Length: 361
Image 1 (cartoon, rainbow, N blue to C red):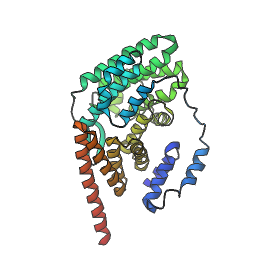
Image 2: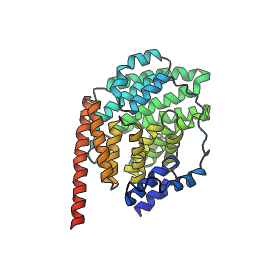
Image 3: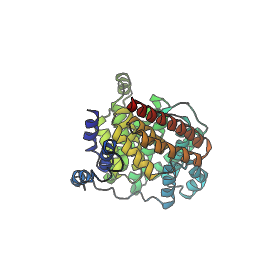
Image 4: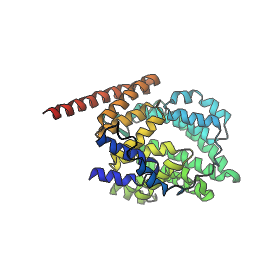
């Protein structure tokens, strides 16, 4: 039943369908034989969905240097982006994205060094309530809020300004959620939602960009415990919608210009931890790891998810990749991920040995 449940879900995930079904096939056919065996399924099922959602017009006008910095963060090169933070923020002082990029780089280090990451799980939960990067993170967010407010007051760029304000509040809400500060998280989440809805009302082409924050809000607000939902009601915080949230996150992961990768990673986390769609999560994480081979966290998450999905040999491959990549990354983040990746390798090796031993009995 679990396998059937995974397959049914993949039918909803246009850009990940081929990968997810292939992983299911590989689990039973062996990797050498499965590379093309289900290609026709992908072609048949995705043809009907082509054109379902038109791409947003590129009204964001992102400078090439900022695009490069965003890609560097996705490669796990947080320190590299931080080293050019002053230059970025001065050169693009009127562009909120410059400060958001810097905040995201600091977030990457905060997450890497303080998140609950073990050889068996990666959770969006902090093991420590503070970090040495907190001050710089907060300053970057504040600069982003100021510049996005200025942009929002400009009639021509009002929608983009609202979008960046929403993203700024969303990044803050993520940190508060990470550290278990529910009141601050709810307050920032409410602000994020309002700004993103304003952005979409002003310019509907920004929906794929806004869908990441709106989707995360809708999903997590709906799966709260009854007690927290009661608190949310008294605080006047809008209700969520789990199904709509998942659909919005899928929209962002497939169509966003700015946050597609981040939405995909969040979806992979949700499918793994909350929804128990292990194969779909693995397909998403594997794609991210292959696309961004210098990101040790993506490789480690893929390794752990492969192990949870019963694909220990694949997990071993990505754990080894994570260990090597983390060593090259260096710093406290690289050292930590490297140590965990080596432990993951050991854990998966033991699982494989145990499986072989059971077969011989």
